[in-house]
Length: 349
Image (tube, rainbow, N blue to C red; front, side):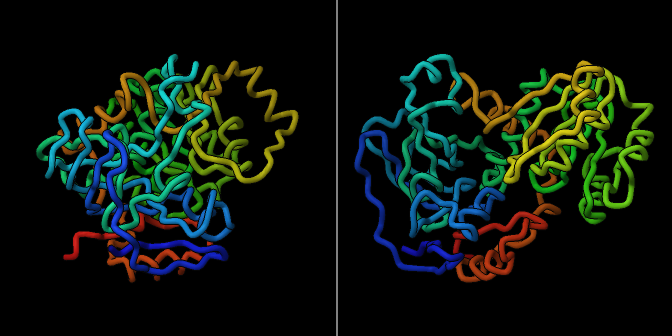
């Protein structure tokens, strides 16, 4: 079978790999349809950030069940499924308290083991979420990133009636913007340094936009003055500057959900730190996208959003390509962030 294989030093190639086999009673063989590149994959490719090499990445994939082991519940051949990439142990204290993302003994598809950038992959049935009728495999490839945002909204107690601010309008940010608009936010403000991303956000759910490359913090704060109460700010860019910006522009008693992953040290000056105290901010850390019952209500909520046609994915896709074209698209990033979702098409069309 064809696999997209990553080697050290940012080298990628399409290679012939052995067909994976079922080795456990809960194993499932999946024929992959679509598999997305995640922002977290970029350091795994370009900065030697993977757990091992060579590796086949891919934790945002959809496909069809080909065969199952003897202990796979009601999963059947032909079922359309999406990847639930975390595999907790389900036995440690954290798992028993449904804190699955804090499991000390977890596995992760496409990171700690090979993933879905291949024609076929074998995973545990616990790593699959069956798509309902009417939900496409293309939509399925976006379930994992959508649920990342939905998890943050859940931790914040939802967004209905709130003044939502999303800092960072990349894929995760764009999906949060659309979800927040669909789930009853009073307003949705997008903040980014890329005018194209801001225009996209305004066309798909944002009510306001701020270009932080040309607007000062004070200008952004003034822009949101009328919406500074009952705020929920979600930081998705994962930079020290944007975390500080979230705290600086927050209104009184705002919630600040930190979603983006930092790769550089964060230092807060006295004034920025004092905002946490003086404004009595609530700081929420949001990690992954799971809750009880496994894999969580976030995944069911994503299903509902698609059933109601509330998510517009087409403008978010930068490329949809064959394995060979996919490798070219990824290598062209040269370690920089994506400007839109890069998708691997394994349907053979």
